[in-house]
Amino acid sequence: MTKTRKAHLLLLLTSFLWGTAFVAQSVALDYIGPFTFNALRYGIAVLVLLPFLIARKPKLDWRFFRVSLLIGLILFVSSSLQQRALLTATAGKAGFITSLYIVLVPIISQFFGRKVGVHHWLAVAASFVGLYLMTYAASGQFTSADVLLFVASIGYSIHIIVIEKYAADVDAIALSAVQFAVASVLSLVVASFAEQSFSWILIRAAVPSILYTGIFSNGVANTLQIVAQKDSHSTVASLIMGLEAVFAVIGGAIILGERFSPREILGVLIMLASVFYVQYIEGKVRVEA
Image 1: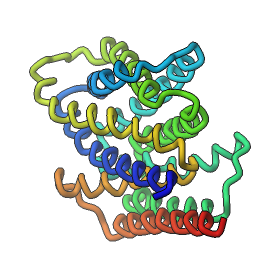
Image 2: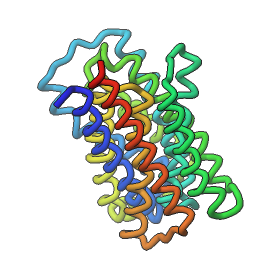
Image 3: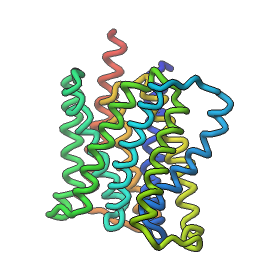
């Protein structure tokens, strides 16, 4: 198995963990505020990675910390907007709007001199149709939560691009741990001002959601993202990770009883087809090369 194919499998696992985490994120908001939740889950993620970081003893320089701070800030802004939107948006819908980074990554990459193939753009166009069917076409309107999620998707697009640019030059686990620490501290600061209803009783009720997202969605999945993106094109990576939307819908339907219309189902199928298409083309190009 090639490094690229292994990277794509890791990204698929990442998308599954991220997608199912939308359910946990939604449930947690029944008990605690979005910033409190983010502060705790990112703090858990740091604790998960800390033993590995100590064992590896990576050499960290000033450049590493500058990159980590930047990536952590982007993560903080993006996840804050996403979590705030989940106060009113369903887990499935939030997953699909967030995954607009499928469309945005290749578009933004153009401004950084990255050439994107025609097959990528075809997959992007198909994904956009699928996302449209999941949002506006399904309800006939955009909500404030939709806007927050769209802005969050821009942030996650930049996050993916920046990680691809710097991940190969730094220790992946160290980068992941520091970005979580930055996002956790910033979330805690905002929570201390914006969310006055801090309660250990409510936090205990949200512990399962905090642990699942902190350990699996963040500690494991975000680290896998950084590791896998070393051997994957950012556009292909965004398409695979965009499957988190599909897993979010499935998880929301099974666990939370969320329902989706035939149009939304069609959107899911189109999105899946776009990912399989670009994977097929990429594999064909590698064989011919």
